[in-house]
Length: 530
Image (cartoon, rainbow, N blue to C red; front, side, top):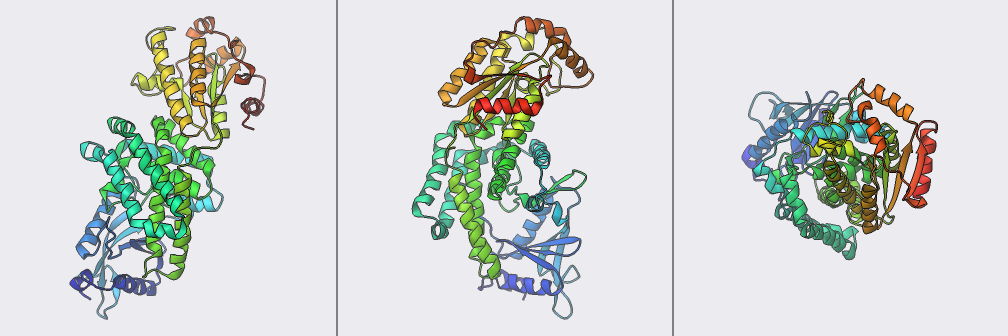
């Protein structure tokens, strides 16, 4: 079969079946997707495109498939090291048998990759019960760093516009409506569409703000557990980005991280999904992603439902592969619907305050871990508003310059704005700040009343001598906090007691003599979270 014959074949899937039979006969393991045949041996992987036209991609010509292979090599080397090796021709030997490499006219092209250990994928770790919270935190940090390096600019920004996102959303529904109705009621499908299109119609200003904040990047586009690898020494490799369509790869960073959080939910790990989002938000400073993440999780679940539906309809695929794809599609459609629903339980704002070095951050971290909740804190927020790196010291005199009342008002206003976005997404939030002023506490109480959520002020109490000792220890290292011994007495002198709060909104704890877990239990009891 020459190149012209293959490019103009009338029987869909014929060339794919020929490739599968030939390379499996050579002892290669096959894994199949809706657009690719992936062949594996002991230490290498060969990825071959199917000669298909799916609307959003067109691989019917050999040249188109070669071009796409070259893009895959280039783009995936951005966030993996030593994995994407070379472009390999598939040729015929003297007996007419297909082989990888060799002389002669290329009959097909494959991307050659180093095979990563199957057990190192985040999916394999999850299924084996070995994907830990620390792994997810590490992965979130790496993805945040990757996004920071990703290209952005005017050409990419336009893919964050409402019009382009809506084009993707509408295309999804148009391409899958008949398949979706095989597993969903018309009412459920209409609800998914209403949520996704309604979100875009109502949040034009938010989407424009994301563009202005340079949150639209040339990212990954298919960030799932099976594409993330964590080896024993802690290094992360991320593979298999979208290379065939810029419209699916360019987008809001939230669209990337939401793909992974959606995947964790699909596998039943809502706790790890929330840990991922909280860690990513803190590392990137992008707490506004909470205003978008429910939409993007619904959107990404629907994309996976579409992909599974296409594979289920692929006549060239094995029946076992098609049957599993049908089951997966239904589950993804249902998740797309669930992602648009409001939380049944009112979220809680945990406002952790107290003196400098009173143990606020330690308790905030413990609350965050127990609740899988994001932390917004005054130290990081102040540095962000001052446009300096988190560990850059701002050693002004007490209550002056970066710590003046005016600047502190801006910091607390930003903390409230960030907390509101998280609560409105249906999630609890931990706010870590001193809350030394009654008016800042009153403003947060007003916000909680407006949002209809519960609020607990957690007052961390400890003897001044213990704070002194902690500040001496802190001065020996680096810290995001600018709290130090030189300003401690002035701070305490202007600290307004937590005496105006009703008991249901106040939990005073001793962070020196009481066990951390006991303190945590006391806070959760007041909040009614346990």
